[in-house]
Each structure stands twice: as structure tokens, then as C-alpha cells.
Image: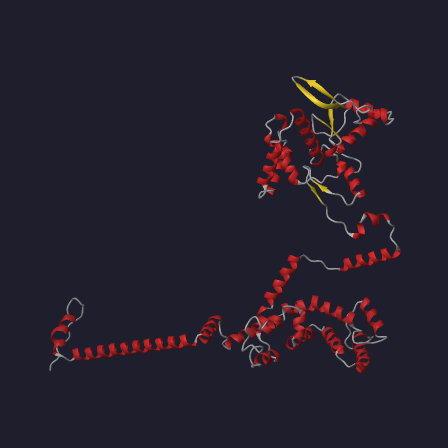
Length: 505
């Protein structure tokens, strides 16, 4: 259609005081399509021409509606550089540079539309840190000197390119598949390009999706390997690194006070001293408040502690569901049995918990029941693995949550806390003071001696002043000076005291 001899004639049209270069009319394009494609209906030719315009290969110079009209409307052909078949991947940075260049040109026909002004404001907020760099690029491209006619053509072609990739809302309606998508399907290893000539290599494709292997038909072994790989990927549990780090930090903070290497335990650290009283205290059946609080971390922590396991068993007995924990403990004991006793012990567990008419029947799903019964044909230490997992999940989701909210656990937690307070556990201030005193013996001895001397001097001065005042009062009370001068002064109106009778000697 752009052929110099057989294509549509491209000409320069003279308008009022201006020239419009390199244009064709819509009627010429329709006539060429009907002639060269053997189309009899003009509507079909207009439809095909509108599809070509919607893809961006030709565009009107008067508006942004990418469609073909069978009249004298002027059109231009898009430059091969901007063809969609080149698989352009325009980025927001390129669009921001284009809009900045549009704002630098003081011409009415190049003013930004409303939607373009909104896009420019949004991009400016998005590229706040590097907006100066974007503006400098636009300014450098705008200063590039070109011929006036050539610049007019280039501006219209660039505008048409962005009309395809950032179209006016509601103006473009392409019914067929986008040609860019078709090109991507045929060429997976496409090169990511920029509008302004910057070429970036795309991401490398995986070996499975290389074009050479796409042409070769896969064998049965290749398909089986791919199925195994995809199944393993489906079962894989993927978590973001930030979530993993956050959970790890939460776990570390939660168990920090239970690590004797991080926090100095009481009464002493058995890892750094010969005193084993801390381990004896942890192994005792009278748990501390710290141990009781640890049971609330997880069911595993509660079952790991013998005292916590006993308390949880008492709670299950009160709810008439203790058989679940008894079955779990029996399976744990089975794993530690000698090999010659495994078969007998496995049959005893089946008779007690899973057989018909069992004394402590447990609630087991059909899948776990069938797997367990099949495993008992050749009993081993892990024959009850599926049943044990099911019972553990049942206790964790149902009984354990109620146990943490129960009065039994809360009362035990508060009772241990009150007991430790009555025993006079040292406060943090006392710990700090004692650590400072133990760490600086010479300074503490000097400080104690100074304090002791000050206290003794203060007591002696107080005692001496009290004794002197008492003696002075006694002396004045029996002396003639008291009767002659002091008592009349006290009995005067100044002190509002009644005169007493003069003593007779």
C-alpha cells in the first residue's frame, strides 16, 4: 500500500496559508483495498482499513479516533520504526518523556488533553525521585533541531504511536486479536525495546520453552518428568522472605527468656557453673509460672513437659475425651519399644482404641482407619502414624484451644504467679544493683564505708544536740533566772498565757 508506483499516492496538500505534507485520503485507501484485494463491498474495505488503523499502521491527522472513513479525511502512514510488529514494550518512563515534550511546545494543536494531563500528574507522582532526569531527557530531545516539515510529520507519528498504546478512553475497539500478541506467541524470545532507541535484552527463557525444543515433539519420558516436576512444585509451600523473617523474629522473641545462653536463669546457669539446681527445678512436678506460661505456646510444648501433660490429661478427663491423649501417648511409647515387643504392643493398642467394642474407642476418619488397618498386617513402630497425626490435629484444633481458655489453666497460671511473688522474687532493680555490686567490689566497699561513717556522724550529732537541749531546759526550769525573767515573759499578753502562782520557796 506504500509502494511508490502501485501504492496509494502520497502528496502534500495546500491549505489556508499552510501545507500539509505526506498525506493520503480515506477514499484513496478504500479504493486501493477494493482494487488490490478483490473486494466488491465498500463496507468490507472500510472494515479492513479500520482494523489496520486500529493496529497503528495508518492514522488520521485531525483527531485521535483510529478508524478509516471513506471520504476526504487526511491520513498518514506510520513510520516502520513505530510499527506494532516490532513488538514494542513501551514503558511509563517513555510516556512521561513524550508528555513532557508536549508541554514544552507552545502550540494550540499540541496542548495536552484532559486524560493526558491526568496521566502526566500521575506519572509525576510516581517518578518523584527521578522526575528531574525525565524532564532533562525530554528537554534534550526537544532541543534537537529538525526541519519544520520533518518535525511536523514525526510529531504526528509519535502521537499516533501513543494513541495505540495509551489510547483515548473509549476510542479504540479492535475486534480481532492484537497483532503484538500474535508476534509474541511466534517469538517468545522477544527483545524488550524502548520507544527512543534503547534496546534491553529480555529475560532468558527456561530450557523447557526454548524455540528449538518447541519444534521437537516431546517423548513419553519428557512428559513424565515434566509431570513429576509440576507435582512437586504444587506441593511446595512458598512463603515470602519477609514473612519468614518476621515469623523467625517472633519465635526468637517468644523463646528468648527460656534460653539460658541468652538470659541468665535463676538460681544459676548450669551451662556455665557447677550448680544443677536449675535443671532439678525444671524437672520437678511443681512447675514455675514461667513453665506454665510456656504451655500456652503450642500443644507440643504442653505435651513435652510431664507436668503440662498431666494437667492437660486432667482437663481431657473432665471433658470425657482423655482417650485421645492416651492413644497418642500409647503410640509414642510404641515407637520406643524393643523390636520383639512391637507386634504385641501394636495389637494391644488396636484392641484398646480401634477394635469393635474397644474400651477407649477414639474418633478416627475412614482414610486413616483403612491405612492403619492395612499397616497392621505387617505391624511396625510407625503403623499408627496416620491415626496419630489425625488425633494430634484433632486435639490441637479443638481440645487444646479450650484448655487454654479454661479456668484450670488460668487458675494454675495465676497461682504460680502469686506463689513466686510471695517467695520474694527479686525485682529487676535489685538484680541490676546486685550485679553492679558484684561486678565492682572495691567501689562497693568504699561506698559502704563512706555511708557508714556519714550515718554514724549524723546519729552522734543528733544525740548530742538532744542531750544538750534537755539539760538546758532542766537547768532553766529550776534557776532564779527562769522565775525572774522567762516566766513573766511567757505569762505576758504576747504569748496569751495566764500568769501562774508564784512558788514559795
